[in-house]
Length: 368
Image 1 (cartoon, rainbow, N blue to C red):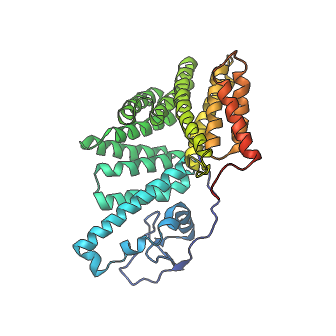
Image 2 (tube, one colour):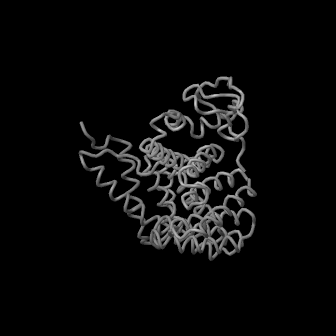
Image 3 (cartoon, rainbow, N blue to C red):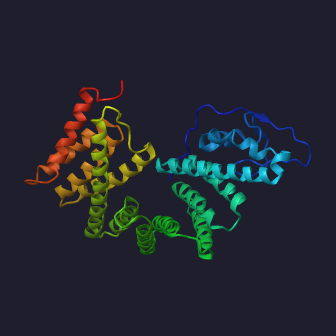
């Protein structure tokens, strides 16, 4: 369960409200009566300073000025053309909030993700209606944020609502079904219903493979979660087999990215830039570290698997611009591979370590 964070940083000022009778405003976060107002946009209200600061850190800083034309009625906005423009702006806000919430969730910042997820749902309802399939992504974001906070009762309600919407819609493609089953699987894992979790992860893998392919990094996320459940059940051989599948998928994916990156490094017109954003790197790093720890803790260590996963981590952090982490995991991978005569990963691992060291000791080619 996530602990209460210490929020800090610059926020907009808040000013007391002086409202005429019958003009009550509601808090952006809790929908209770508001007594404070953001002094930058003046169209967003809060019940207290704590909720104002939480909203600012969560999402409001990024959308403060974007709310003004949406929440300030004008003669133009009441006309058809103006109404269409407002709907387009709301759809843009939905996408901004979705991306912000996903990024914070990937970094494990569940409490900070709540304001963005909440606004995403409210805006989605406003644009698409109260019972449409377009609301499902927002329900899932809210569910994941609350799951990280240990509010499993609320998570159950949110996922039940999402299930009901999906069951009533013929528009849901495999991607929506995959996301829903993955969330349900995580909920059942958290509540200890491991058989239900396995069933939902199996459905997650089926629908993800329909949308992205059987060997995609998205699909193998379902294998990873399923492996975690088997590990909880003490079925270590099955868990190891699934972890191996995940590791091979990521190794293939990262090797291709590394090859492209190396070609760019030697191009005079290219600079080495991180391939993955911070949130994605953190997410993948956590998954790969879990598999590496599983292997290290196993009484019968598989050196080939350790080399494979550690090499993945080394490539991931090299592609993310973190040379020291790449060297650390690369060294672990090399030590494991050298325990196996003529192991096919020894040479690629050595090549990566040499590349990282060469970039540390001298500037790589770049534009003048």
